[in-house]
Length: 514
Image 1 (spheres, helix red, strand yellow):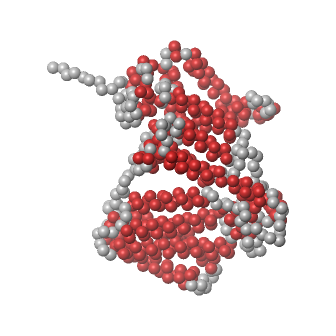
Image 2: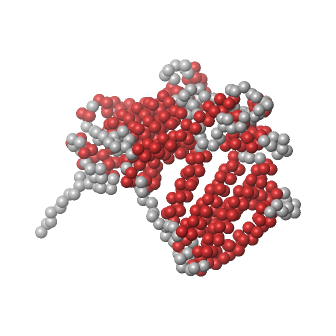
Image 3: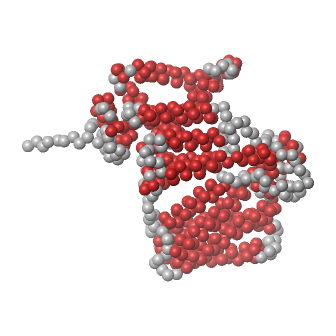
């Protein structure tokens, strides 16, 4: 006897070709798609058509408005305060459909744009982008979704910028399958989108390959419809759209499932191996600590044939690598500390010695800087060494208090992000210039490097050097602010100081530097 066969969902072909039969495709629940799935893919199917669902129409209008705003803010202007304004407007537009907005999300957003207001650099842009994604996912998920916020942010990051490309392709497919009665606009787009886009791409390639065409277009530079400017401007619009669209559809991003706990590597590490390793490692580090006490901390003469600066520089970076490996070993050996009583004291001794090792690396670097001056690399190395020492101290507290690895990871992440956030407000170029100018009479003073520190170091360079040798250096130029779009607080402070009349008798300390 034949059994009845029940179809639990709509076939894919009918769902895609019969979208126009449904009055409101977006009325389905958030987790159910047109194909009968509940994994979240249905939300993508409803709106991936680039406007087939009614809910996509406001987002497309918002995309057009944001692209127009970005063109007005960025085209032909250096970025500055305009970048912070654009990020705030983007966040406000992306969260506009929400009935109740989490105030904490706005606090995160405001804090994330402050580094850009201070100074536009790679670090401040990265912090602003991360803050925008965190604030956006926090606003969409609400205060109760804080525990899964890292996975949600990673899920959103994974959609950049491919989400816009996928939705664009889906829109083109839907438009191609739409009936002829869909309207003249769809037929117009199908007939002219590819020819016009292909002609612009071909024109840009020919202009770069043929200098005659380049000269002709150069003669049209004053015309409003200059093809070269149109191509460049159109590329900017496309780039903005690719980065904006994933933020507008962030509610469709699938969170990444992060592992709650790491599995111990029992295949290659045992309790006996951990015991033997800790005994041997502690003995080796004890020898290194004794040598540092003799040559570095006690003021003894360095080994024969080597200056104190050379001895310090030779061991600074290898000791930092040793401390990093020590932290990794401490995390890997953590599951075996409860199997034997002796393991926990040995681990505490091992981590404490590595903290001293990291501090010794910082001291070595300081001795080298006192002899040969300060550079960006040495500043970054010093900050990294202090971070490693602080991370090892956290591991020491974790082992002593018997905390899980998740406790340690959260605090290490907060320490790292907090350090990067604080560094975004420090004018390292001015710090380096101030330190090196103080030793201008030293034999190792590097005037060329001082002049190459950039505009934000101009306030720390003596006027004689700034107007003399540095004026002929291509890398040196004072800060320049043409309007509110490229305004930055750090550049404004430096310019304000340079405009003051010079007073050689009295040196004002830190009246404008950051």
